[in-house]
Image 1 (tube, one colour):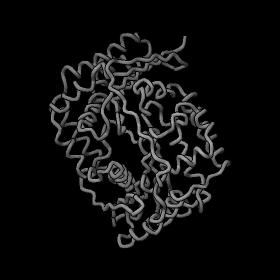
Image 2 (cartoon, helix red, strand yellow):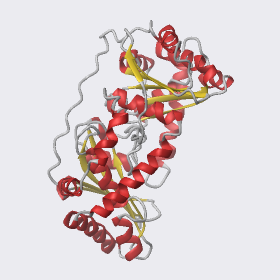
Image 3 (spheres, rainbow, N blue to C red):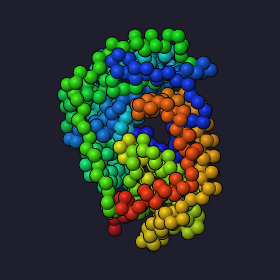
Image 4 (spheres, rainbow, N blue to C red):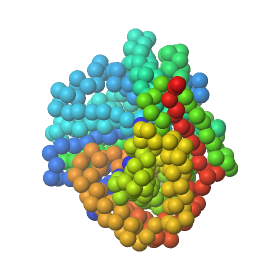
Length: 431
């Protein structure tokens, strides 16, 4: 699955009780979301930048991922981000996706000021240098080679994304299309990308936990309020719209892999489309867990496959239902592949039952009850929804799931599990 904000069959951005929050915008355009929980002794500080691999220049793919590394390499007043945060008893990490990049810090609430200082300093001014760029380029290129070139099936998204998308920048993976694009990056390329996207008016600051609600706004304004917004000299180019897929697509990759694997992607609309909750439930029923249709038919009943699963890509502009299926050893590959298509056809033909839908909804509520325990999950979800311009979804999106009917799910099954919307990448073993 992509390394952005992926779903794993169950919508993880849904809560079963109301989350209180305040949200406002600073004069420089920074969106702030606050969730105060007086029971917490920790605080999570998240900064989400509305930039991902979709914003990579075509000749510099992987740039958003490179920046995830550069943002930890030092800023104007902070030579080492990790050291400063660890001295305050905190930990941090980041994740780059197709649409967003999220940086998060978790630390004792009493030391929250440290995170505000660190995040504001690298939003204000990175420590640009040829040496720092050279170090991070080497790290990213090595990661590319290790994960994409040296691991079996590691280049899947190079093949699959390029098959699914013809013009949209989703056609290259988050890590980039070619490592040479990173090797050839210049300091001027880096500065242009930074001042184009890493500005307060393109970001969301989300804080959750046991902070002081009386002083929090004043402290945020102190650290972030005077950071300049985008000046217009680095306007973001519009993204091309991907045309509809009108026929099935297939690519065969013959490689040094341990066994054949089949990947099927069915095009779906973007994250905010009204059909998204039903598609999410569909992907779970089709291939998530031992009760899913794919597992029952292909592993329990026939033993044709050693592994089979289904997930959902939740990109903003366009998503997909992705099936990952590895045939068992010593089975006829063509028979197994046909059986996979037959199961998808079975779901289209028969649909789902009320009992199946009820079971998924019950698991959904149980799952999300435990996910809300993490204060960082709350901060991250608030940042994500605020970036969409709809922070209220953290409390209202569950209603969209609970209101789904069997007819809704069966409608999206027929609408999106169509052969003309399918892209297939099969890996076959070298002779």
